[in-house]
Image (cartoon, rainbow, N blue to C red; front, side, top):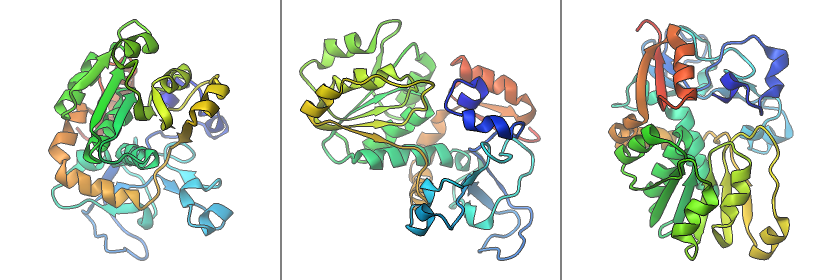
Amino acid sequence: MHIFEWSGGYDFMAPLLPLTLGHEFAGRVIDVAGDANGLAPGALVAVIPSTPCGSCAHCLSGAAESCERRSAKGTSADGGFAPWITAPVVNCLAAPNGVDDELAALAEPLTVAQEAVLKGGVTRGDRVLVIGPGTIGQAIALYARMAEAAEVVVVGKNDLLRFETLRALGLRDLIDIGDGDLETALASRFADQKFDIIFEATGVPEVVQEGLAFLRKEGVLVVAGIHPRRAALDLTRLVRERHQIRGTQRAPRHVWPRVLDSLVTEGERIRHMITHRMPLDHGVEALELARTRRASKIILSPGV
């Protein structure tokens, strides 16, 4: 969506355009060249979009998700908004029994959310605030609940449809600030109740500073949004409160099997995140629906 809107944060793509978008996708294997790694034609796979170089300092130290020379489907190479695509066998993870095509297609954004929850260190009894009820925010809230957080509050702004999705996911503590501002809306309820962990999933830089006002001393704020401009922070307050700000983006490979397992145990609940299903050749229409918040997560299918 950020790329479609060209709202900032993806300027590195400009020299690579045009290319086919789509970094969240799954598909059926048609053919395998070389070592099949157990995959056969017809197998349903979720595809890890990033391919690390394998030789840089990050890769050699076991942090391939931080590779600075990686190739990524949908951002630096043609992506999944196509009837066919090639991908390295090692990037193709077989979907578990009971996971269908559309659930498998959710794997990539779910790994981003699961990694955010792991980065935040959510544990039993934590009070968690999620700012931003889009797909990533929805999944963060779900995985925080699965991590046994005692309280998970989600905040949005004129997000009726997404809040319906959150309710279907089992989340109940939802705050729509409407046309108001975040600090005023939260202060009326949580002035004396700070959160252990706050997740920013909006891409609005001001939210980072606003969220810190509701973080307990030594609490953690995880930034998951892609921002079009820099944020201004009260660093003196951050130091005195001993706050921690952690950035998160791609998930390490070991997170993917964990997410695929969650699609087995929570698949029908997670399916509620999908609000629309459309043919691939209606992709621009689908992106416009999502941009204007008339849809949440849309599944595009070739041949539908």
